[in-house]
Image (cartoon, rainbow, N blue to C red):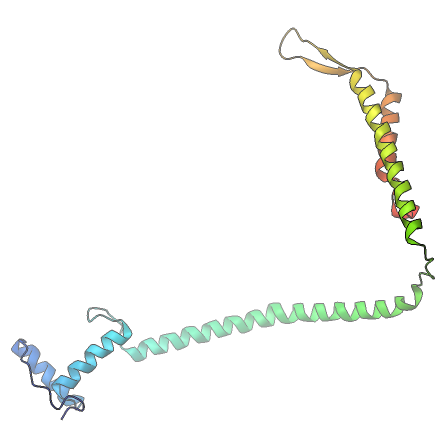
Length: 194
């Protein structure tokens, strides 16, 4: 009999005669009792989240074949990408690293910075303090120049439309201001050693 269900009583279900005949024939072909065949069918639908109205295609084996074909196609695409993109890129990067290593080996002997001169903490603080004051003085002078330039700006009213501002300065005044700006922003360059 049915394992695990030996002591349960039978229940009658109303099924059309033609459907009941088909079901009995199917149970004979799979060598199961009607209760166990029905239980297995319900379990299959619940496990796979499938409804009896769902169409799975021709058969499950055809689905399996389609999945295998698609998987093989994806594998072929990945291998192609690996061959055409990754391997050449890896080879280029590897040759660049080898070239860089050779250059560094050659330049290793040429680079000599000499022995550094050691200074005390007070000397270092004094150096930075002087540089700070120089910069502050330069900015103060630039601020005064800018204020002087702004005093030369006059508002001109137009008869038609909006008015505008006019700068009454000579070309020499503007060049002097430009030189001060360049001096303030560019006097601490690597070439000067600061």
